[in-house]
Image (cartoon, one colour):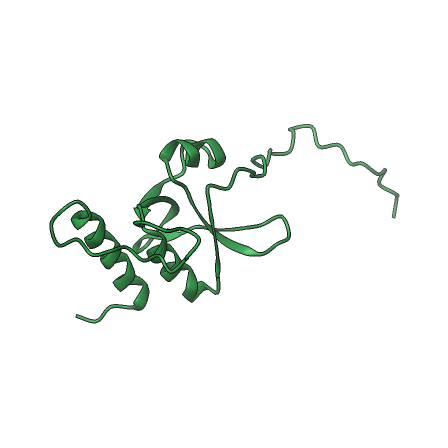
Length: 133
């Protein structure tokens, strides 16, 4: 069976999280020395697509594309809303899914997000008068 690197990382992350408490568990290495210790599964926002689900990518205030992940379902819903679907993945799996998209930044527990876009009011009078002709 042939897998892409992203699929292999996702399978490894799930397999690792299943064996984390058992004998012979492998040490977790999320590739980031600033986060020592085991890589816990994170809540990652996704969107439905024809193949199942796809990673949702966001932008930082400066416009850089970024993936986001949250340490709890509550933190995800506080930032993005209650109706956002999510999956649980370890940080290496999130990075592996984001890399083919050209996304190298992963934000864990971001706290700021833009308010949802409001629809235009029903009364849409033009701001400028319409000139004849």
